[in-house]
Length: 151
Image (cartoon, rainbow, N blue to C red; front, side):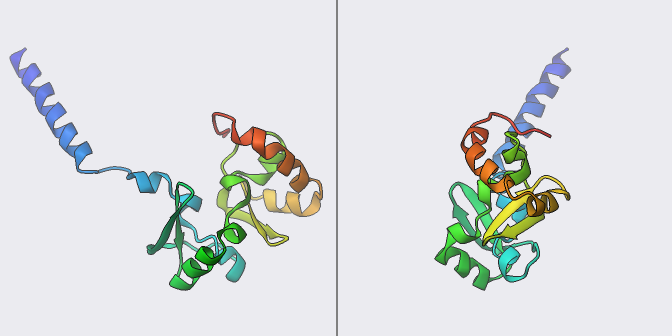
């Protein structure tokens, strides 16, 4: 019985060291916007590109990464132009009143704005449904206050 007590004390000690050393997810990784993709690349390269940790900025509580110093400078000069609409939520889901995290692989730049989607069908839906954007615009305030993401 005494050995079991010593075991749990040692386990607690090593677990404390493990957590104190920052092993595991870092706070900045948990708030990594766009899963590390470069928001400017959707406009300049017309495709998603992973950003480099050496070119990053904290913006509105999230860390954005960029593929190059040039992209970082473009973002700094006009962040609103490059930020995904609806706080990175899926535009089609927002239009339906549901909170779903957008995936950086499924995207559309329309009227100079970046929209993310939860699946591959989203960009085509928005391209063909002229009312989706206006419906999402009206719904976003309510959807953003929903407590949990849908799967």
